[in-house]
Length: 227
Length: 191
Image (tube, rainbow over all chains, first blue to last red; front, top):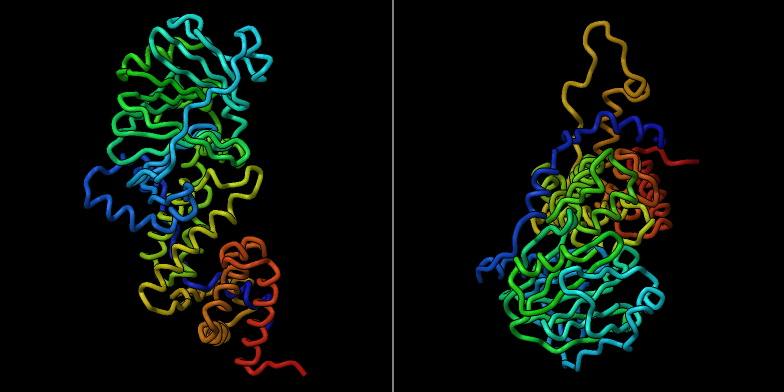
């Protein structure tokens, strides 16, 4: 018996015809988060193994769905991890004129919001704070980073896919949510802030995040004003 | 999910498709599904042992692979990474069903009339095929999977290793051992 014989045997072995899996896979990828308790239980069971790999310290929650943008990942979990919150640290204040040189990319500005009241750099993200409108915008080169920003949301949170200038984004509202900024694997947390909505979107090589007391329409208007 | 204005056009190379899929581009991922659904399904079939389980395993594997793309190392080969996930799905199904998989010969393969036999048929007569496959099905799951992946699906050693969830060196030793067992079973031991 030789390897040649085994290779020849291949053409006689009954291997079923190829199936077109793409339509079913696409339909499943497009599915929305399930909100019903019974559906959640099923999803938790099915994804239990996956959750181990995606564990967020110090607690573990079953991940029900994932949403990706360049450099950003949103985990949709059955319960939030039990983390200790800390004051939000926006890094070191810098002048708007120094923003591009410090961040290493040309930051986008909003024609609608005008210049920010404060600009800061935390080593990974460039932050704009708009005091009067109580809005917070961060941006970074998402195309070159893998999951720099990880947001964990619970099941009371609604995630709505949106399009900004032809590129994908997500509007996140309801419940509470956390932002994890993990350059170099270091995990930081920000406090839960209620009644705040978040829009994450891509713009060319950049990924932006807008946070404030926003409707989806207003968030999209502001996002589309960045260029 | 939004539509990327900049990616309309001809299919791009694999790394570009993977990069786009990582950014949430379902169209790019669908191209990858089309490219690998054949080998994914056949690999699942070899492991699971029936077409229905194989189809489910391949489909689940593609969905899980998409959701795990953030872990995929840019520049690495997508096929072995995918096959590892799909084969795991198939293996789980086979275990939960508690059955042993077996391969069979296709029916009605003999040429009729004066049609010339294929090179494979010339090398391997009908009786020899039955004999070989029967011996193959008497091997353990691990040995049979290794042979099927390497010789029937024509996977490389690295791809076979990924599908089996072992190191490439283990594939070599497992194949060598499996071939030896086949020879013993067929009464073709060396001098």
